[in-house]
Length: 154
Length: 154
DNA sequence: ACTCGTGCGCAATTTTCTTGCGAATAGTGT
DNA sequence: ACACTATTCGCAAGAAAATTGCGCACGAGT
Image (cartoon, rainbow over all chains, first blue to last red; front, side, top):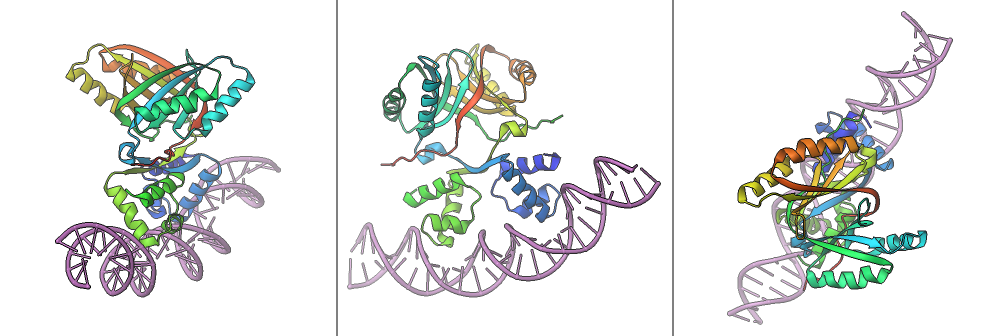
């Protein structure tokens, strides 16, 4: 992971579908070593996937919801079961283990309120051992990017 | 936006760098109409960007923080100023306008706690008119995907 | 049944990817 | 300082993919 690798990542974050030749130009390399570096970054798992940024609304999923979940108890079984179930839920895009009051923060997308109600009833409560659910709806997006900030690894 | 378009999006969400020919195979189309559909989706803004999913830790940004922000007042000027400033902050990956107690929810990445302290002091408080900041650290990732769920637009 | 519009597949050209190979560079130990 | 080794580069050629124009087929509306 040197400076060139980080430049490659930054360029691909802006446009993951640019050709290898453009990328090579951008980072001042010829195409072949450039491609080899990209493959290496994939191999090392630093590049985890090439994905799309979709207009959720146009795609038919206009509602983003953040859900704070507290479990009743924190035994190994309950935690493992909850996390396994969450991974299965296709409406859950992200799930973090959190500090503070709530145990988990979920980012959920649904197409409307009715859809969300269905999600809570059939996908969350059915997991069991949930002490509380605190829902916050996003009704506007100020910023949304995947471009990671510059920083200098010492 | 018919079924084939959604299939294209799903396929590209799983691997945005797959070749057009593979994509065409996946959605049972020949390469040329497939490419034309992709271009149309780009044109319409449904595909907003091609991006990378990066291993934040390997990239040197292991700490994800969620910050709930409340403004002192909600005049047009204060709101516009806050949102404009947030867009400039490279550590802020996402910012939503929220229902509930807080006005905004920010998703922030930093390399350590010291970095976060610096962010709060120099990037957040310096914006001004902020009534309160409530920080929650993510200390584990259960799930993280950009793959949107299946759903049937009626 | 006819016409028009939409979207498909084919095919040829251009562009890009991919791989092996020799050369240059940087780092290491004597 | 020197030689040795390990990386990593650029070049080049064959293979694969993208891109475009064009003709055809299917469906909707008259």
